[in-house]
Image 1 (tube, rainbow, N blue to C red):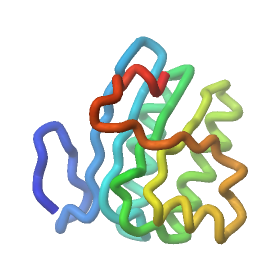
Image 2 (cartoon, helix red, strand yellow; image 1 turned 180 degrees about the horizontal axis):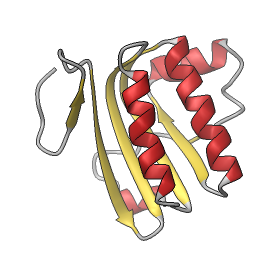
Image 3 (cartoon, rainbow, N blue to C red; image 1 turned 90 degrees about the horizontal axis):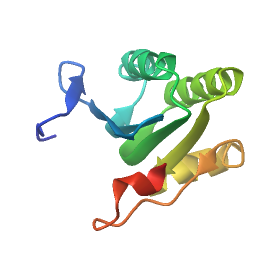
Image 4 (cartoon, helix red, strand yellow; image 1 turned 90 degrees about the vertical axis):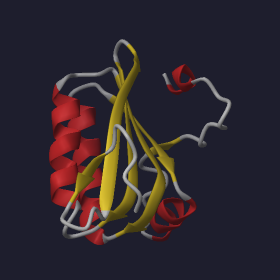
Length: 128
């Protein structure tokens, strides 16, 4: 995976990278690319917990770059979903086709708020 400016790599081989932005007050967008598995899901969950503790009213996980999602990654998403519900944070996912398929197969597609990926020309504030 190529190193891009502003992205933080997880793991020795950078199997997962993320970038957090705040397009407007009260909104956090965490873009994730790579593999969410046993090795990368725990540190990614720590980062998501850190962002969630900032108490955004909306947290968007842009998972359009996720190429693999294991049961450990699903567990991390479910834990975050539960924490967001308790903290009155609206959680939304922008899934890759693989993430969407995995969530559908395991019966969780209806649990999460799913939004379509923005086009390249789209204003990132649209996610708010």
